[in-house]
Length: 216
Ligand code: DX5
Ligand code: ZN
Image (cartoon, rainbow, N blue to C red; front, side):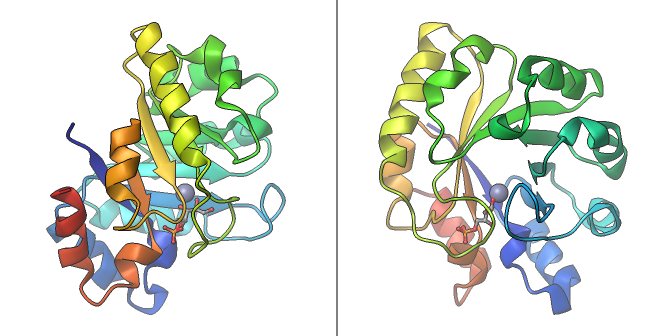
């Protein structure tokens, strides 16, 4: 099955962000993964609209925006204006997830739902047709460079069969600790969009690492 690679800019070199954006533009990667953290939903603060707007001007590939913020409904429109192509909110941050997904789609973006490692994928049963993408977190969100949680494989397999049972076209994205050692198994489990930060930007030759991942 062909798959998407979304390098996470959280692990890019912020002293030379332009250079790393060009690197992704010129690579075999498919999307830019953009991690937005508010210091409340997760114990870290990353970046917001000013950086995203500059990124949008330079990026030649879609922006896959992962919101790790509380009350994301307050900002959906602004993320659309900042250039998000895919907007993913956390299940745990949305009391009215169905409404939130409808709002994202009505703003012309693809809608995604992320689940933390402690959230069962069974909770997604009633929204399988309402999201374009389900993001299974394979680390507790907040930081790059963390260790992959192996139970993620079971969650991906379960979600893949749920999606197939209702013939939904939603994608399964996996995020956190993804590297060349677990890549093949993640695809075999049913993931078809892969986020990688440290494994790409921490490697000696990020462009080659992306090519290597893409050829798996
Ligand atoms: C973690 C973020 C991830 C992170 C992945 O909260 O959502 O996108 O940047 O980084 P790695 O691949 O280094 O685990
Ligand atoms: Zn992410």
